[in-house]
Image (cartoon, rainbow, N blue to C red; front, side, top):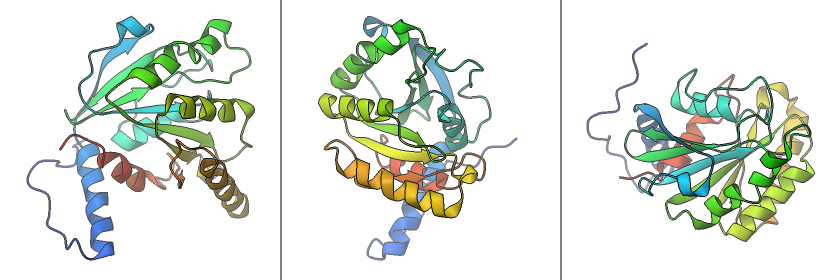
Length: 228
């Protein structure tokens, strides 16, 4: 399947018109995520991390929250980030180069009751050290499942992000599986929780990897952090 053309100069927009600014941001996001995206590194230990280079966006969330599906939806690919049939199985940081302008980092899932003790400890060890000490890390995208309640493990990870002083954006996933009234309540809850955490962005983005809801807006948000 042919990928959208990401080459050529960007279109010119009236920067004084809010709608034009919004459309420009959406177009910048589309163009960035239409670029080639390739896996290039995996690390299970802090000393194995690749040298800092491109701006990095890390994706975090509970096991089975839809993290791999979201990364695939953002990049328009079906198998870039592979899902696991066994929750809690992934134990490493996976790095993807997006068009030589942005690095996407797939973090291990957390909060799975049957995960090995070492996996849980990773979030107090390797993951925290990565979050706290990575100079190129621009933002963490924290995924919360719109269909279920916020878990204690989610709140614990948000506290960890605050301690690491890394800015993070709350993103609701699987909105297509949630009734409208329930989704509105979940959006309000996510926003209220985010406002209680100093490192969190004040607003949350609602997405569905199935329908594409919120994908253009999230692309635009992340494109603003990419290398020019």
